[in-house]
Length: 446
Image (cartoon, rainbow, N blue to C red):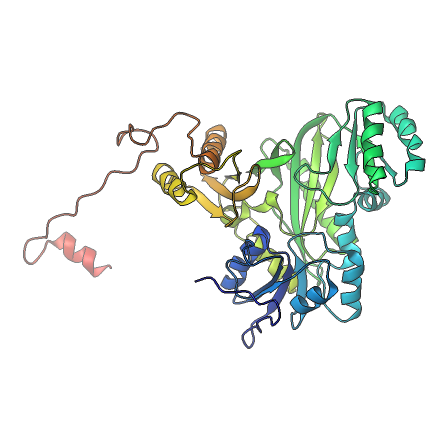
């Protein structure tokens, strides 16, 4: 029976157990709750409703809004630290909480760089971090600056809303300068400032995930490649294939330096562009557990969710080493129409074909393009990366659509078919009275 979250009286943590408050009740809070259980901690979440992903599994829930100061006070009451599963809390409210003595991690002066793309670009440029060429436009009267900027970069343009937006939302690829002007005007007319930047010659997208504690300890996971489709991450490969050791080290050092310079506490994801000439440019920052780090749940010695808790509580950070040569993560995205087959039945069939799949479902209703879960596939020495990626994509599509895109039919497959259910093993007959020497040795070693 699911616990009924209270909108008035948050639960108190057991005596001696650290209490962490997290704003947001989505899948990131849900998976952070899983890590908190293992560490003997108590996670309280601020969710908008009792059926949100995290609210389904943790009994310590406050129902409310991240834009209401009283709700934020209630979720933070008695907690050692207040942290986030999204960046949408108004900064002025967080500053009020800090003034009232609440330990906010990451602090508002750091979090603003994940909330406002223009503030981020300006700060990174001041720190000498590599970023695409850009200009900020905050008023309609300044729209003429766009033409001047276009003349300087002589490249296709991207127009981004300065605030909000994720998974491709708030990002528009302009066909030409006139189109960029129209897109910017639409945003500005609605009171949304824009960031206009060059569209770089992109080879691929990478992510450098790190964590930092208040003590100043930092830890970096292997740099990963993220695969995007329609602006949404569909797959992550850890570590990024064919990334030179020097480039990987440079990305990790950049991420650790930014975490220190910005005063980040917790997990920081630095999303990177790798250009066709091998240059690394910072695209965006996220100061929380991140989709590009879901592979760490099964492929790393310390998951990003455990590490985030360690960091915000100022514990020594965990080992970020990979436990296998390669891990592929695939997001499960809602189909255009939910299949007639239940998700539980789809899971049953998936396990019959791919028993090595590590599945993480979020308890979310299926909607087109919505992230409802992810899978991790671990590869050993000698694993064919392309085959591992194909298996991950097959599995993710099956869970979202109830269709095997390779035409595999579980009813037609025999025991020798790839992915078929392993044959049942017959129970051996009882040993003769007294048993054999082998049997006695086996039983003696149990």
